[in-house]
Length: 223
Ligand SMILES: Nc1nc2c(ncn2[C@@H]2O[C@H](COP(=O)(O)OP(=O)(O)OP(=O)(O)O)[C@@H](O)[C@H]2O)c(=O)[nH]1
Ligand SMILES: [Mg+2]
Image (cartoon, rainbow, N blue to C red; front, side):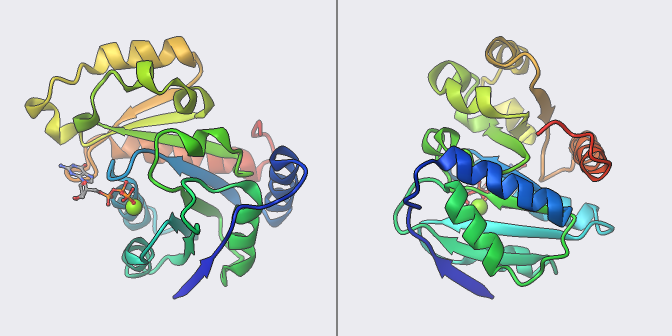
């Protein structure tokens, strides 16, 4: 398993780096999807389920963490290509780091690469990674008020996955109120309530992902 340590990229513009990486990924025919959320909201568990349930897709995962390689090992154990990125203490990935991680990946023939960003509800939303799509996770135990407190990530995401819905009976999480708050910030965002534990809601999310991949391959995705 490859582990690389990266530092913040020092260039004139992260936005220009992001555009350059998007162009390269387009040329490679690989859809890059950035996953953002707080620590522990279920990113690796969700990815594991997607990898198991979509075996026809060639999936790769970039695992960005401050320390350890436990997530990349979990992904590799499922047979998907994975690389572990250590961020030198930084709480987010930038476009230069994402490009370097992609360079270091052995498998370049992927249909889909997920970047599991560092678990953090604030910093990752401030940096365009060069991904074509951004998906945010919010887990039921975190509460339905998060769109009010941390609006930027909701505004930057194409889809929101509300995770751990099997825990709904134990928390005061109002799905409808949450969706209304999120749509006020971002009217176009797609919302998928799922439980990666029971599988509830996974099909709709996976259909959306494969639809986005088809659109990307046919060159008509808006990035
Ligand atoms: N009940 C329940 N627990 C879940 C679900 N998905 C994940 N978990 C649990 O939540 C915890 C964190 O899950 P991870 O997938 O490691 O979360 P993560 O977002 O990748 O965490 P970091 O990489 O540390 O940011 C684990 O104990 C999982 O078993 C779910 O759908 N339902
Ligand atoms: Mg993880």
